Image (cartoon, rainbow, N blue to C red):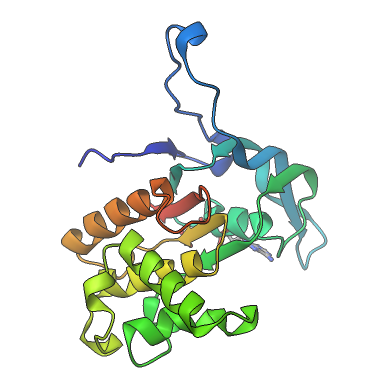
Length: 228
Ligand SMILES: Nc1ncnc2c1ncn2[C@@H]1O[C@H](COP(=O)(O)OP(=O)(O)OP(=O)(O)O)[C@@H](O)[C@H]1O
């Protein structure tokens, strides 16, 4: 399946991330590059095992994700994808290297049932906005723009339990967009989805980060997923 994305593949280990952006053959005519939203330089992360040995998990990992783009990092189980996301989210401190990521930053997890909590689509996307001191009209506007960005606006009143797994993932992404996140970290969203929902979720996620309909400015997304 051709993915309409820039993507980075890591067949063996995440420290071999390759940057896959195609260079413009005539840089004099090209527009200025979009600002970077996430940049990791020479990131390493190690833990000390119970036996007192240093166990490297990420090694010398460098990558740059511009605003308005969705990048995928694909790798086998245990290669360090979740660790990379935790480092990006600030949950783990890199042992070496530097990192910058625009804020606010939101996580969307692999099991949508752990993330969508309210009875209807609209209520779920509005749930996270309670902390922002917004008027009711502002909440409604943010919710409808975010749902529109992921193609779920017509589902606003639908009970959550009637949605497919992929639709629930899109509602979870809309919740993050409604909170005006600048960086989306998407952790193995395809795990519980059938093939159709996988393609839809990737397409709509890509659309959402490229779209300005949320009014957030451009969002960048880093999606990690497993490959056999
Ligand atoms: N605190 C820790 N102590 C020891 N080993 C760890 C620790 N955290 C992660 N690891 C190991 O580092 C490796 C990478 O883990 P990580 O969860 O990042 O992999 P992953 O690529 O996300 O895997 P999966 O695709 O199965 O989710 C694994 O071998 C894991 O056991």
